[in-house]
Image (cartoon, rainbow, N blue to C red; front, side, top):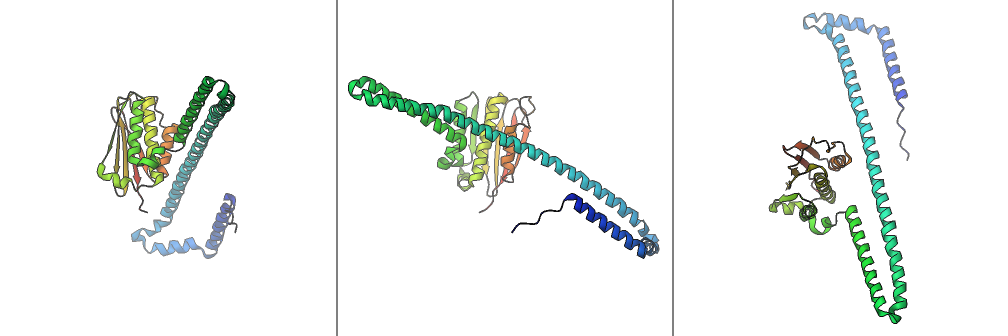
Length: 296
């Protein structure tokens, strides 16, 4: 069954005009204004005769209020449309990069494997030393393909979430991130909350992991911080994530509050009915994430 189409705006406007015209004709026929004025006149001491003009002003005020809200909704829709376009563009860029890497690296490695395998088959009896070198090159090419596939899988899906859980995944993320940079990363998760964190949904775990990952990436790129602290607090009905660094802070010119990274973080948390706040920690930036935990 096809649902009925919504009425166009002009059709609704015509309906409003028709209703107003019918009311005006009935008001002229029954002289409603005179009757209302005469009825209210006897309550002069209550000043009820001023009610029609007061209601008129109220109607104008409500119309202005509705117009303002409509303007805000229109601006929000435009912003959401712009955000959707940016996210889709980023998604397509990521897919293009993955496709290019698959084409270049995997295609080249497969060609090299085929050549080395063919050479190995010919040289295995006539030149055992050359055959051994070909086998070693095959092993190196296979290792490169394995590392490439592992890196791509990490970009598509955090592998540790499935095997280690959220707590250990965050610790592994911070440890790996600190080893590749000059900023120390400290993770604090109450041991008594491990049982609670193990029952979180996959969408929530992924969002917390990706937000932490993006926050650490921003610290490495822009903050020039020496320390960063990641604190996860899991309560029965609420998850609290706090990420603090001692770097340049939110208002530094390199930190764009409308950048795609921060916008993506906001969208991830908003999709779970949560809230994310960016605060100046003086020094550094503090990110607070509040996500309600729905009971299954």
